[in-house]
Image 1 (tube, helix red, strand yellow):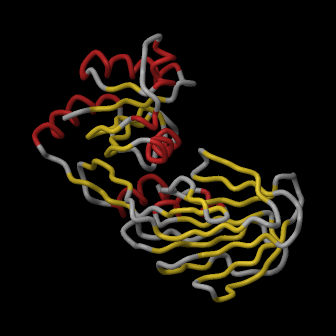
Image 2 (image 1 turned 90 degrees about the vertical axis):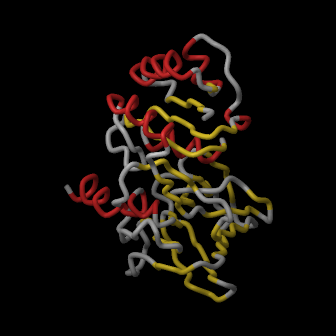
Length: 262
């Protein structure tokens, strides 16, 4: 089994634990993690391993899924760690179970994003379009499968996967979707008019047009952003690529209950 390692380089406790992992497993180490450890590493885009061990929170996992290739074993060093699987104390047992085949793969739908026809990174959680200026509404026209869905003014909008429905979209008033569903939920951010909280949509293509000349930011899983404006077209649909997580228990409802509902 070939392991890779990506840690949050800005957190001392993550780098300290990453060093312990290196001493145990001799994994391929991502470049920014390696720099924080004073060693050589490889770029995240070059990482192609069987298992990527992430040390941090959900942001570290989303970065790994966006740029690297491999199944994810998330070690929770963050606050919520909704996508993570184990605590640092559980790593040794987790490696033993992986080596003996005592685990299963949790496959999650991702969405692909095109900006003016050019494919960007796939998203595991969400695509966000929001105003590039504080307290400035923007106008959006939304099409689903070439049919007009709606037009509205808002601070922005979120298109989330079922996995991402428990993240930013939930904070914006969207529903929680079971992670095994394959569809998308579109949620406006602070819309101007009285508006349904969200559209829950089956697989299909969402097309977003910007109706004024003011600047927006297109943000993918909180890890990549680009400025967009009136002439730009954003298209979103199901990706052919899935996120794959190593799990030791198969209970997504329990995960939602424990980490969100309490």
